[in-house]
Length: 284
Image (cartoon, rainbow, N blue to C red):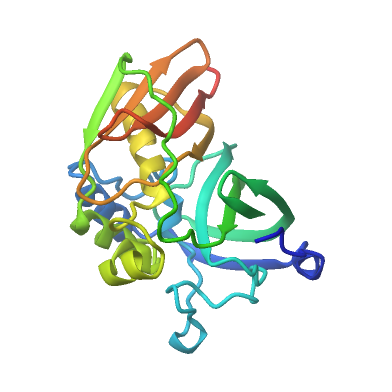
């Protein structure tokens, strides 16, 4: 398939949406339990980094849901004519905390739409910016990279991820099973069927098993930072998904600290690097 004509999609650049919400303690307590921790943040405590994805989520009516379980295309996001939609990565900058109990306004905007030829066919990237504000002002800016691609042929070979370093100062083993994926989907109101519908993921999307959420893998990286450096305040975080991870397969989060923060990555059960990230700490 040739690159799709994205000229009509350019009309979505600049499209905006906003929501207001309170950081209720229950979703944070539920994710704490799902990650097998026993330290839920109490009232007034800062929300752990990346956990803002539990809040301010758009409510999608059943009639407005697409066949893949996402909101039907053509609303806030453009109707990209490629079958698969994935979270490719992102960049986040914190200028203040998001405390439990705080009232927050999230302002979202589509910033760019680009097309390129990938190793397995055409790709369309949509960049969405989210700005989170509390009564104290701007607290977080997130750039969210969404990638669309066509479904591969049934006999298409699986692209192997690059080899990951096997040693690091920090490491944490995770086994994202079906229960964890279900809980994370529920907590983030994520209806994408690749995370819970075994028949759909194999017969329609062509994956060998349920796909682990990209943001959940990013959460593993930041959980590693929290365990290794509980005294540090995060200023910036960026990550990029390199290959899919499937439920029931062990992964290892690694981190190598340096003067500014840490280089981070996740390796799958074969030693392939499936996600790369970088965390920078606030000065002082």
